[in-house]
Image (cartoon, rainbow, N blue to C red; front, side, top):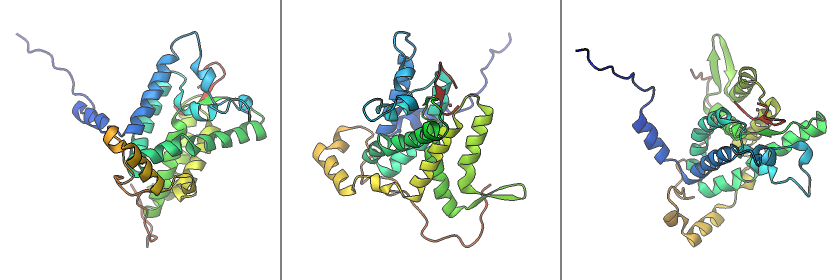
Length: 271
């Protein structure tokens, strides 16, 4: 009697994946939940979530459409678009929240880290290029965080090597932006560039002025007992690497080497 056929081993460890998901901090969980919920809501045909929440340069003004500056990263043009952006965003957002705290993450991602890339995109798309292409997708946050990480990495490892060439580490998000635009059709190259630029500003510390003072954050946490009431909440006093992460205080002495698609008229940000 032939032995029973065995299934091939999985390319990942399900137990480790489950453990990682269970350790995700609160804000990261909520963002992922909203992204998936809005994608499910888009499956119905009565009302278009994409048309409602996409970043449309020609429908945003002082008196109307301002909510789109915050909704566009949460909306995606299809399952594959949503899945790839979730996979790219999750480790970056999880690390950011672990380093800076949940309240800081809420203040930044529901504020300047959404509205500033959107405003820059509208400035170039409508004001300079005279275009009206709407965009959606969480890759705006993924590229922004990737650019911020690249700036921080540059301080300790200024170069990575490709053959005989040494390329500045801070340029890696630009290469990623070019590769995504070439390999994935109908992505927003301009939208990703705007996100990368804001990520550079974040990594260089120019956006710190938009973070609420730590004294106020502690007062809110204590007054509402957020740490005791909210599971997976990251307190301002429980951050892993300090408020703005660990940045080297001295420059390295030598050179180191370290080995948006259309849906109707909406262009997606990212793969």
